Image (cartoon, rainbow, N blue to C red; front, side, top):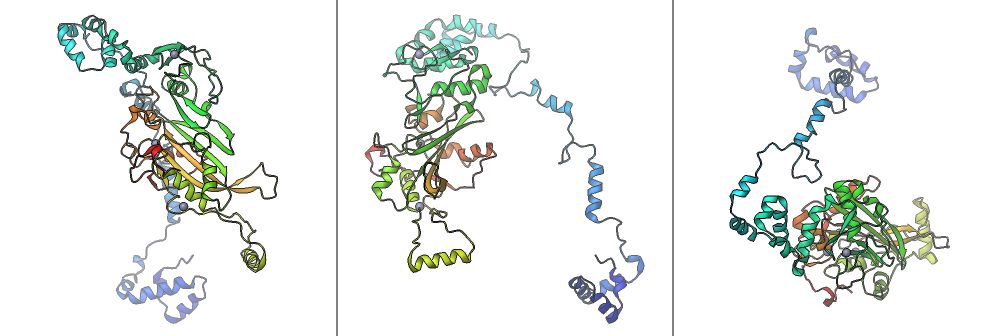
Length: 489
Ligand SMILES: [Zn+2]
Ligand SMILES: [Zn+2]
Ligand SMILES: [Zn+2]
């Protein structure tokens, strides 16, 4: 580093040549040019007093020392002071959000009792109030205090028990979930049943008999237990979803952890992997489905690969709206991009091999597959919180005895937000994904906005990183033909 000041370099040509032999030649020339073109400044610097004194330390080092001195008392790298007393007060009972269902509100209620005020209103006025409520809300109102119970009479309970109000009965009963850790609400019965595998509940394939409670409606096909189809032979029963969300909301004795639902399995040449994560009170699910695919498949071969012959559903996981829109076309488009193995014989093969040697790479007949603008972006179902990403990846084929262990595979990843798990009706996301009546009118783009389920999910697991993806609608034209349409096949 040159330590000399501009003042010392005013020696004309001799000094210039002397300094020109220094290693940082460019710097010297720059300085000369600078001082020559700004004579006024040079004049100003002539007197010895004006020369700025060199600091004893390099500026960065000085800054570091100063910073360390200033932040010695602070706890974090960013310099904030951690006052543990203040932190404890900040998370104390007084600051709990009353709308948060997880908050353990133990604050003493100092308000005067409201019973006399409730009692001062005549019973027919209360009856008028109750008219504005649905049967579940009416029962909740009657259940809230003894005075209200006597004011409203037995009518709310009788109404709730009517067969046509079966759904409302479920809505009311689920509000008592916290009081019953050893029971589980059965929606087909509208009753709490005792858990018979408490703490040992294990999600099994759909064909395994695995009752979580003794239920008279277990074999009643007219009242099937709510479930969500993941793939062929795999479903997520609502009871398991209930258990996970209860454990999250109230405590581990109420259910099971979301990790205990994760599974890996193979079927019909496809391998599947599920994983679950709870984010802000909602259960998120990811299903990764993989199948090896040969290049240059014909249209009928593509269909053979994607659809089951049994029920013409895709082998990979899909929401209830998969027939509408572009999802299947996107898969077929991705399959069409799988490159054919290169011709290794003849003159062209020789040329390829020469190029490979020149670029110093091993010859790989299944190099990277690049997808197009249609099949590369992530797709979101407009009618339910589901997102899909179709990829073609070079995947190890462990079943293949051939020397070439890596083959191209189509990978369809689905992320879904299953909702808060209160009931199959009250959790709008669950109802929307299953295409149920209660989920009608769900608009995923309005509900989620710029947030993506995939982004939220992947950011929760540091081992899985997802490149930023553009998300476009799975059904941009909004046509809803379902099975009647032919676009899906
Ligand atoms: Zn039951
Ligand atoms: Zn494409
Ligand atoms: Zn959907």
